[in-house]
Length: 145
Image (cartoon, rainbow, N blue to C red; front, side):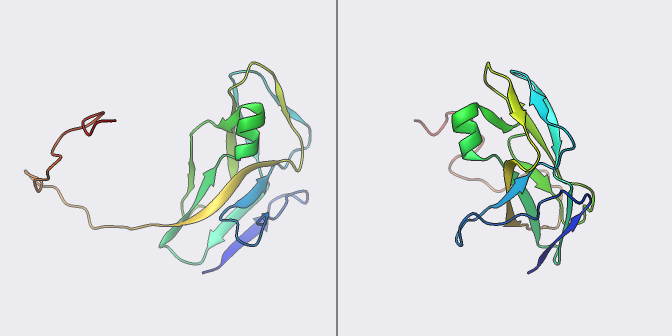
C-alpha cells in the first residue's frame, strides 16, 4: 500500500512518524498567521495537504495528539476524523479548546495524527428480523460495570 501526499501550499509539512514504530503520522498546521482558539471554541486548522491511498480497502483516520490534550486541553472537535479514500481536497483539522485559557496554533505546529485503517465495504441488506444474540437489545450499561 502507498500513501501519497500533495502539497497545496509551499509551507505544508509532509507527515512523518515520530519514531520508526509509531502508528500515527504527525500532521502539522499550515498557516499564514497564528490562529488563536479561545476557551471552549473550535477553529478549523488547514494542513496544506491532500492525500491519496492507492487502494479502496483503507481510510485515513485523524486523531488528537495526546500531548496537546493532556497539557493544553486541545482536542479534535469531532473526536476522530475520517478521510475517505476518494477524497482529494485539503485535509483540515477541527480543533477545540476544552480549557479556560486561550491557545495559539502556529505554522508548522503538530496538531493531529493520521493513521491508516482498514475498511470493510459490506453488501447492504434490509430484513424484518435480525439474528438473536445473548445480549439482544441490551444497551447502555446493560452488561454491568
